[in-house]
Image 1 (cartoon, rainbow, N blue to C red):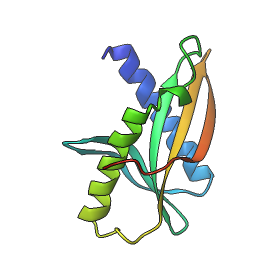
Image 2: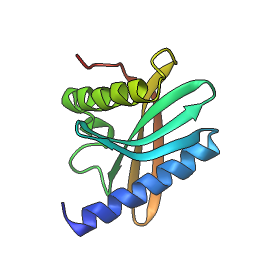
Image 3: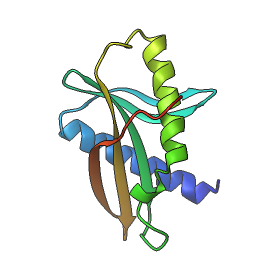
Image 4: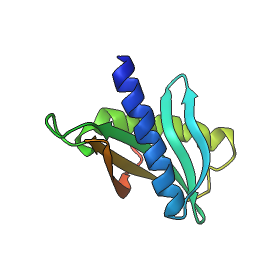
Length: 123
C-alpha cells in the first residue's frame, strides 16, 4: 500500500471518529487486530456494541466507498467481531455492523454513516 493511500486512510478514520463521537458514539477501540483481520473502530451506541468499518476515497471514479464492503470483507469483519465478543465476554450483548464512508475531495470531507450495514456473516 502506498504512503499516499495510508495517509488518506488515516485521514478518513480520523474524520469517521470525530463524526461518530459527535453522533453520540463512545469509541472503545481503534484498529483492533487479530490473525483473522482488523476492525477499524469499535464503539458503543448506547447499549449496542458497534463494529465500524471505515472506507475512504478521494473520489468516486472507481465506485463509492460503500461498494468496497464486499461479502468477503463482511465475512472477515464478522470473524474478527466474533473473536472480540468471545475474548471480552460480550457474547450475549447486542451488536451490529456500521460502515462509515468518507470521501475527501478537494480537502473537504463528506462523511456518510450506514447503520446496520450488514448482518453477521461468519461461519
